[in-house]
Every structure is written in C-alpha cells, then in structure tokens.
Image 1 (cartoon, rainbow, N blue to C red):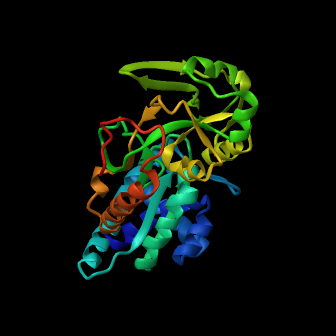
Image 2 (image 1 turned 135 degrees about the vertical axis):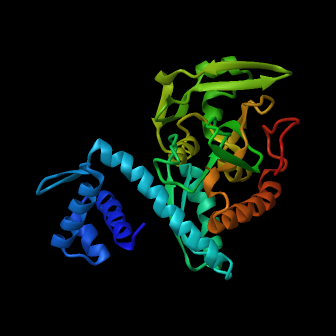
Image 3 (image 1 turned 45 degrees about the vertical axis):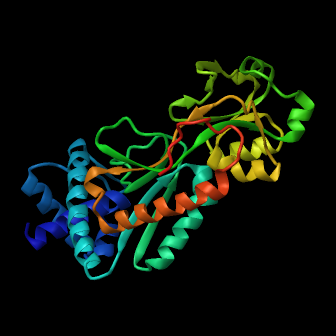
Length: 319
C-alpha cells in the first residue's frame, strides 16, 4: 500500500469519526480543498461512493460502513505492529479501549486503571461504561470487563475473579417491610431493577439444596434504571431490594449500608472476565493490562470477598 493511499484511508476514517471532512483535513494537515480532492480520488479508485455529502452533513453510505470496518482493522494492524516493535524496546504505548459495567467501572476499575497508566505514561486510555450488552468489534473495544462468559466463539474470555450475585436491601427497608424468608415471598416486596438493551433484568435464578428455579420479579412494584451504580444507591436509600454482583455490593455490605437477603440461596454465579478479540491478545499493551488485572483481582478477591454471605458453597473458581 502506497503512503499516499494510506493517507487517504486515514482521512476517510477520521472524516467518518468526526462527521466532517474539513475537520478531518485540519487534523491531518490538509486544506478543505485538498481533503475533498483526496476523498474523491479514493472513491474513484474504489468505484464506490463512501459518503452522502451535503454542505451541512456527512454520512456513510452502506458501502462506506463496510469499507470502514476493514479500514479500521487494517490501520489497527499497522498500529499494533508498531507497538509490538516498540515493546521490544521496553515501550508500551498506544490507546487502550476498555468497556465495563457502570458501577464496577466507576468505583473500582477506574482506580486500578489510573494505577496501571501511571506505570505506562505513553498509554492513552478510553473507558466506556455501560450496563448494556456491547459488540466489541462495532464498539472498537480492546477489552471488556464483564460478569459471565460470552457466547460468541470469536471472543476470548479470561477469568479475572470469582463472582456471585446477591439480593440486598437497606436495613431500614427490611425493618419497614420485613425480611423475605423464601424466593416466593419476594412478590410482596418492592424492587430496584436494572434495565439494559435486552429489557428489564427481572428474572432471578436461585439454587438451594441442588434445586434450581426462576422467580420473575413484578415490575409494577419497582424502580427501574439503566445505571447499575444508581440501582445500588437507590437500594441504600430504601427504595427496595436489588440484585447486585458481590464486587459492586461488598463494601456496602461490610459497612452495613446493605444487608444480604436470602443468604442461604445462591442467586447466580457468573465469574468476572476480561473479554477480547483473539487477534488482539498479543498486542503488548493489551497483554500488559491483562496480566496487571489478573494480579490485581487475585489480591482483591481475598481482601474483599472472603467471608461474605451468599457465596456458593463450592465450585467457585479462582484465577
């Protein structure tokens, strides 16, 4: 690939990202006229219209979307090759794109990423927090930290830590409304329910004495949010029972701000994983972060989780 053609591709990718050809040109050091000429040349070489352009908007065509995916992969491959060469010289650099759930990302992962980046000052960080399911390729993510293994066979899941979910509520709420003794009694209670792009997460799965069953939580008695951190805050404020991963609730349980409900029942087990594309595993900055997270979670698992209620009796793996 000629350097000129590579420059045209970079311009195309920047223009799509910024939504402006002139802005992309300025970023790469081209005049508006030069940027327009280069894009026209690229479209002519491909015999394809990449953008629908007006004086006020710039939108990718269907063909442009397809070409964009391939261009990003190609540019990233070049960036990764450079990063790997530099890593051989003792340098870890480039942009790390990470996705995590809102509650976990804000109050725990954020601190660890700052610690990691302080040891690698040439790294740039992009952290996306969402409680919705994400597509790593479309969202351009290097690593997603998620509870549970993905079903996509093109993704690799590396276990970071054991995890289980608990039902919990504020002591004041339980004093006012009573403590449920069985899953069937949950229908009498109020709830704080997390909602993501798949809908409300109100099917609760229980295990006890080798028996497994599902309890659907009534939505008419619930407060709903798409933010896991807010769900925890609402529960502590006494608005109802909520379901949280033990990593999100542990500190509040130890401090007495939340109390575990139905501790003799296993609500759900789903380990905490780092999920990534197979072709990004060997990128030095990604590998460095993975190794750092495995060690950080190993220490935190013992410090934070040991002795907490609701833990599975057996079979929980440690990394």
